[in-house]
Image 1 (cartoon, rainbow, N blue to C red):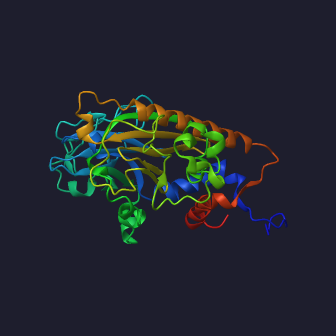
Image 2 (cartoon, rainbow, N blue to C red):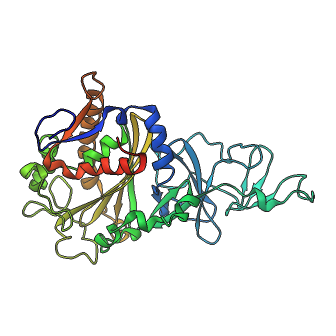
Length: 385
């Protein structure tokens, strides 16, 4: 029985309307989720050389990610310890519409504040402060840049904006990933490279997008081209899909293109199922990963407001295929772009529909049971709804 309506039903109530519109709830999400969880922010390949850096906008906080001379990645808040000036004054922050998968710029061996020339090592230690270095009461070690946590998996890097709290409770990236690395261990994620990035501006709450990704009840009506390649997506409302083993394609198909085929070779090391089945993973709070036999589509969600989310989609391929003279990823990219736009359009329709004064909460049907995870996730981090 639905306790809110008294109606006997197998349907489960969604989160209340306010969780998709409220500025107050969004502020709590920023503090308890986007700033406290490990937030997928990019690919290591974006920052290939020492000094290369990105500036990333994580729910309103600007973070500088830089590769050090030792080849490590470090993350710093884009704020000088002197007067708070931005260390990088660039207006653009990743992901940006039309951006490429490369660095924003390169530091010449150090990070120099443009205001009063306080200069920091790439690791974030204060190196020089004009006219203060000889002051015996001034201790440079007390003025290192504020650090953000950064850890990597599968060629992706993840940020944590409250690293002290996370590590104190023993919550490193491995704890957040859980069993996912084991499930996809045969895919050479760390070795893949980005052939293209597409950035979408979606007028919908980030949770609407994750809920949409986490069920296929909508697939038959929203994705006819996808269901032609993967008929299982429209059977029983997508309610009996074996995601652990992977989802089979139609006979003769093995990947996400309009034909279901391609000339690209499967990733080396896949088992027989993985060569013909599709796998997908959702890593809260902002990462969606779809795996075909010879490419991957990696989605990072960047919440902007309660009703606006930027989505960056990186299309990843094996370097041996990318090195071929006839390499052309458009068969996969064009197919994904169609499917993506179908999803974003329907998510925006959900967001607009929930604006109605008659909407208090929605319902999950039994075949949408995976979507119930979002309620558990939000309750765990924000308290019960």
